[in-house]
Image (cartoon, rainbow, N blue to C red; front, side):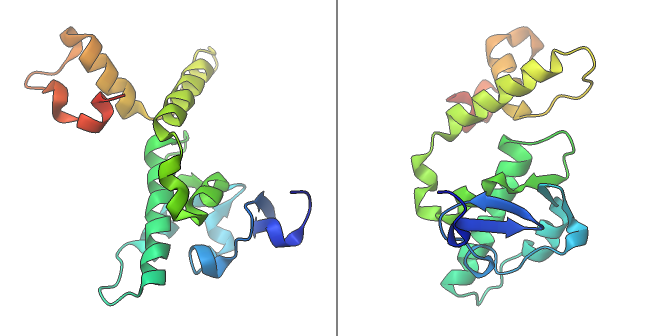
Length: 163
């Protein structure tokens, strides 16, 4: 893909190769520089800007809100970082084409991310664990019933239980 400007998406000086993506196509707005930290955007900006979709929204607006919501899910639930309050812009190429989101193996990617985070935390100088910890907790409760909380139902997390 090279350095073709038509195939680069820029956010505060950071370029991502994602075919042809522009601000209007994705989210309709660009976060202000005060909300961008290196390669991530503050969650508060996403929540303030895309908190509730207007009732009379057209299809393009609904798609923008859907992209923002999916980015929040990816950045805070499945592929969370240690900060817990930023969303990395690496997810922009994936939400650019909503029709292709279902073709990716998100379960495998989430497990790989969890393994990577667990390997990092094995370093004695690391004090925080990041990643999809609800999947780890679900697996622990399923695999080690002794650790379950009183009244916990094994299948209360049906999507997590299938991985």
